[in-house]
Structure formats: structure tokens, C-alpha cells
Length: 107
Image 1 (tube, rainbow, N blue to C red):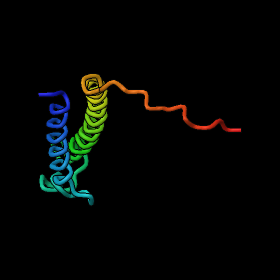
Image 2: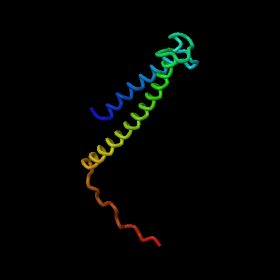
Image 3: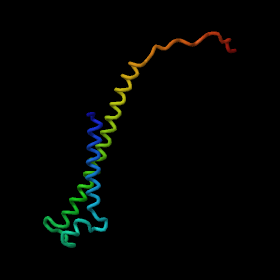
Image 4: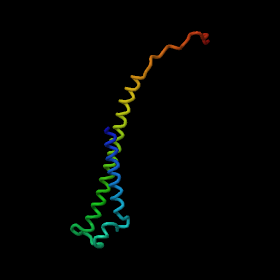
């Protein structure tokens, strides 16, 4: 299994987790945090910490997704340069000189 395949699997997993975390949130402040007991401000293990956790996990997963995509791009570039040079070396036929000097000189 190539490194690009590993990065691709990780990207799919992180993207799925990011979708789940975003779907749990509600843009109006409801979502999962409103299901656990109303609009109290700082409760221990309550509403405020749930929304903070969802917000931080969204940013962390988005950052991780961006990093994985950039790293996978680097592995694609490294794999292509290595494969191209091998293919060109194996399949390259000798070039014959087809240029003729039968043309008249240009003034």
C-alpha cells in the first residue's frame, strides 16, 4: 500500500468526522448543546463546554484535513517524479539524426 493510499484513507476518515461534528452543531446556538438543559452559561460538563468542545473539534479536524491534503500532494509529486524517470529510461529509443543538409543557404 502506497503512502498516498494511506493519506487518502485518513482524509476520508477525517472528512467524515468533520461532517458529523458540523451536523451536530446548530448555527443558531441550539444543536447538541441546547438538548442538555437550556441556556445556562458556565455549567460544569454542561451546555457551554459542549459547544466549546464542538467548536474546537471542528477547527482541529479542519486543520488536520488541510494538513493531510497538503502532505498527500507532496507524496503524489514524489511518486510521479520517480516513476516518470524510470519509464523514460526504459522506453527511450535512440534518436536518429534525420536532419539533412540539402537545403539551399539562406541569404
